[in-house]
Image (cartoon, rainbow, N blue to C red):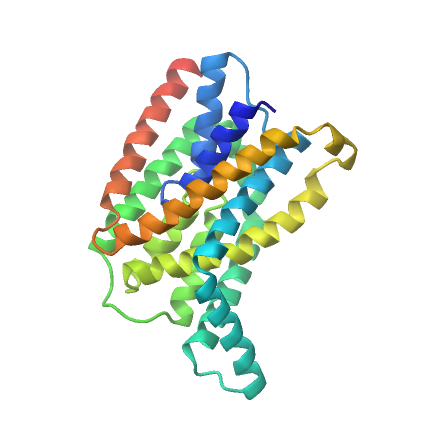
Length: 277
């Protein structure tokens, strides 16, 4: 793995993981463009690439934990305090239940569709079509939204389902979860906050499973850890500032501009796939 490749992939992960534009789609697109420019393919199936993908996801996870540390602490404290005192009425306890339930639903859906989803990574044109679909979801989420309300079990379940479907490259995890919350009446910043907090357990779970299933331990000593470290730094820094300014953005604006971006990026990638594929 080359250093420049690692930094680019890390930055792409940090930026696109939290903006509603699909990190998986942008990694696929970056790989395709890298191949066009250099004439060589970015390998995404080797142990080093899989290990690096896990690391940059953990780096962006660290950005979430640091930014939402107070919220996460309050939810965890309130949840275990509620269990101890048998008081299940607090907002913190209910939020903990919502996160657990949504995460469980995500894991079930992701497990059922992961093989099909993984097969799409090598087909940028299909990924681009799914990105166009993400744009439609973002565009219509607020136009068709229900009356504003607080988070409930039904909405949390639907958000978990949306997050599971986002295993398909091109369907934005943050985009689908935030849009689902907005559509069901959750205020924009609250929907985004829940989406980011919900990313914590699912990234941890995925990072625990994939190393056991996909990585060949014998290859680890050959990895370019310097390049990986720089890629992780890029993922963390870009991820942290994306969260910070995206939350400020949502206080004043809706998701339409990201819908337009997804449509433009999707059409451009279809063109590139047809012309250079």
